[in-house]
Amino acid sequence: MVPTQKIKRGLRKARLIAYRETAHNPIDNLWAFVGSFLGLSSIGLMQNIFYTVGNIDALFLIGAFGASSVLLFGMTNSPAAQPRRLIVGSIISAVIGVSVYKLFSSTAYIWISPALAVSLSILAMQYTKTLHPPGGAIALIANIGSEEIHQMGYFYVINPILTGVLTLFISSVLINNLSRNRLYPFKDVNIRELRYYDKIQFWKKR
Figure 1 (tube, helix red, strand yellow):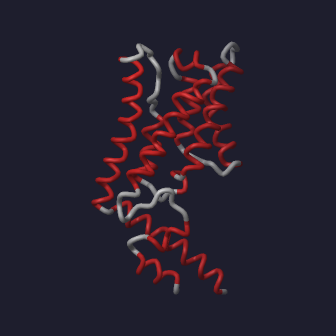
Figure 2 (spheres, rainbow, N blue to C red):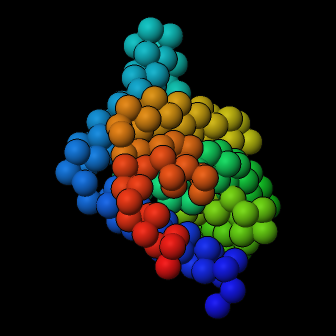
């Protein structure tokens, strides 16, 4: 095996080790709880403020953000949790979801819109290399959500989607980087900075 192939193989193993160690570290489990709680509660707080202070019944919190929180705080090193995929993937899915609903909402084929919206979102995210699993839920909600969501039209892309993912992104940057074992955003070059340096170096020399 040539040196370049050995290095690539070692890096793949290093990523796996670093991810496994981070995922099962008891302290990191606590950080995952803290980050998820603060991120989602911040979105909930915004919704509450708009309702109680401005008497505006605005929707900020949707189910897809729960799935995004699992990635951002429970699987921080996952490629699907990185900023570009989180933000761009979510926006692409929202735009596609709304567009598909508008296309079929007044036809007899409305039943096909949920499946088509999710499938097109997956395809678009794959082509743009922004695959973010909760994006499927974002596209689906745009089609099977309440009448309030349907009436939003493309404003659904701005709020709750963009405001929500930006809030989760900021929370992830602030909370995840407080831990010695977490780095967010996470890049391949960050591997050397992790706590499990000795194991990673071992695999690099294989």
